[in-house]
Length: 523
Image 1 (cartoon, rainbow, N blue to C red):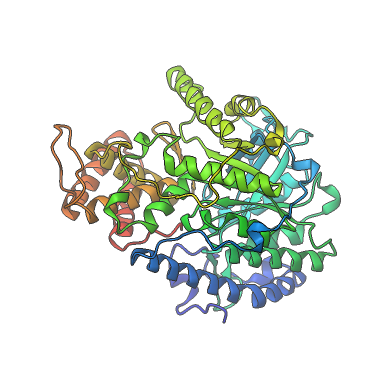
Image 2 (cartoon, rainbow, N blue to C red):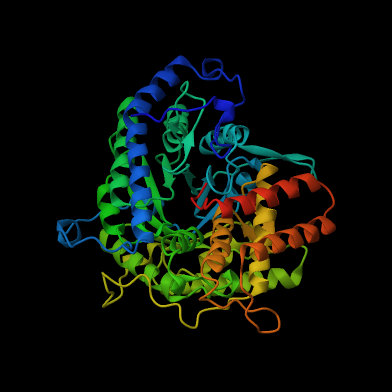
């Protein structure tokens, strides 16, 4: 059944996106759109709720020792089937990504020369009603080639240039609900986002078929939901069944074990997979939360080629190229700077090494978030789609949880950095930002989730895993210590920036409360 609100819309969980109190859908949306949306809602939201409930079961089973694993061999994995990649998306050596509600950034990405641009309605955008509406508006204008912004420094309007850049739209994941559209009911946010774009798109103005990015998938069965949704919308719009295309992110631990089955279930629409490595790291911690062997080191001491990433990269490429679709790498968090030459040089060098590693794994492209990264990223990939090359002797059923022995450091300063970052990130969210440049790193919900989980790990396993202080002695991470670190880091932050002190305090309160309450889902 459709999820029903148990409280008035203005009293529900603040993490659920909802319009302002008193909002009347009929005053904003046409009757035709609401009828279209209602039919989809009745069919797809109950299924979405069932899939989310199944996710909770899998997580609980994992915490009880029954961890995700490969599915048994089947005709899906043994039969000879392949997807024919459309020509228009065959070169995706770099996909620039950024929040949909920032028109200036979207225009700059589209004008950067990047082969692909992912316009984001999800993690890098605050999940607020006003941000969402602005994101929809900017996305539609970008797809129609009509988006622009006013450059105050140059005192002129900057428009998007004509190019072959592929535009992909990342919608919110199946785990997120949207309130306020249907009275007293929650709607799948994925459904609302896809429907809002697909209903209003003018296909004759598009340079390629409508293409979405699917985030946060956790099983191959979920691919059927997306496939059915795309086909239902295509039927309504009078398009071919396979008109809507998509890429999907591998950013949950269970999904890593079901990539080939996922591709098969979405084979009429899918053009590739992407390793969303920061979200994947958060998920890896979440599913292994009860295991002291998986207390991750300080994030920035984990090398880019750590075995749990490297094995997944190689397996993803093998499966994707075997089936004829793209395998795209993740984001490099350290950002270039046009005001700090030393930071800029270091960031671009890190980028080059990181993307060269992905290319050596035969991945077909990368993600970046800054126009200055595009040229270096593209240069690391010798050929579009690597000509679907495959390595010899890749283990199809490889262990995706290799031992962490000797990887990184566990330090009190690393815990402090985590505490500082979650306060700063949440402060950005409270100010309407889904992603913020913090201490040289572009941080979004994935980072926030990694750090909150990392803090919880260090408390949960404080009697087993040593976290070292500056003097080299172990510092037991009790809840009281974490509170003390939150107090100290808040004081340091407000001493550096005295504006908006109350918002910083609220960000600090929310962040610690989320850790105490075990709120680690990606929302």
